[in-house]
Image 1 (cartoon, rainbow, N blue to C red):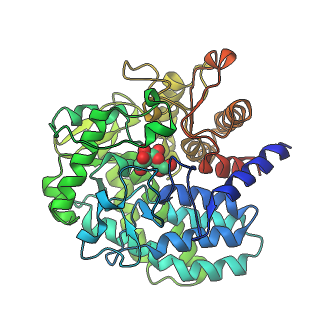
Image 2: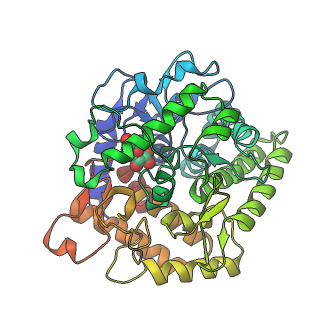
Image 3: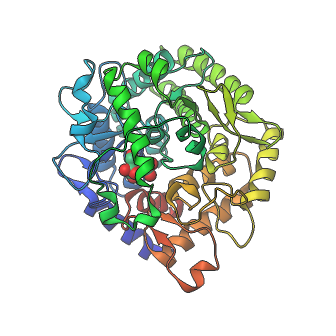
Length: 434
Ligand code: 2M8
């Protein structure tokens, strides 16, 4: 069933695979290796070419810094179709950066742990995949150790992000109030994204000024986390980022046990317990009945519901009672039959924009996280709807980067936006269809 979609998805992934042993998210628009894209891509590749999936993750981990940090973009080539490139990010300013690869000095959601576990689940030859995992898993552990050592400023099991690009949800309305606290220069630069994609679907110039400003501050401090924690105007606890870390902790524990190598399990379990507790105490909003972001600069929650709020299900974070409340919120705000699941931002909010990138559109990677989270808690009908909506959006519109959630708009126009032949949309559709 849906063999034609699987075929198309595989050919997109094959087209986007590069000689350096990694896959670009999208031709022209994103010409390098992105951290969480690579993870989702490997899950798709694992279904038809496990060797490629292994290479994808090994290449990513090869770019790890001395302190365990894994950068969000690895600049394997000199492409100038993307801004800001290696010469803006300047990873060489950090004494801990990889000497082999140029990269950014920021990271992205820590998906690699659960990606290894997904590869194990998908693999037919379990012994072979475990041998491979044994060669990579300590690097992922070191990455978690990095987060808990350098990014948990309050010692509460929750790690901060210092840039909106670290969240993966770049121009989410969540950040709007943070931008109001900043007044960056009006930088002169040449955007490249808007040469590939309609500018009305991308962040504004002023938003890019904010994004660049945070990078300049981090560069001033040579990407030192302690200094960043002190000086960055943007310092946030993100439920999506932390849920991915928690899910990946769980996966590492599972995989170390399978490997019969339990030396690091005790530490992982300690982190896990503390993180789940911290997450439930600090990020749960009992008026909204949802997990929310937390602004560490203001020391206050950012009280909006986003698709990130529901990612906690995939991490197994809420108890059943809280999961039920979370689903009531999800279906009450996002679940109208007129909408595809799942909008990235609260469709009932005046900040919702169904066309603009992370301000409302449906994203296939978020749908994949929700699909798996919903199944974990037995919300099988809603999980099925998320899956069917993902398939319908791609089948009707193509393998786009993001989609308009409003169904009736799709009756008269294409509602796939951003880059086409987008790798994670292809990879995760394969996984949902298999
Ligand atoms: C988008 O982010 C990049 C910066 O990292 C950009 O807009 O230039 C986001 O959707 C992010 O989550 C994603 O990893 C990246 C590549 O697909 O594109």
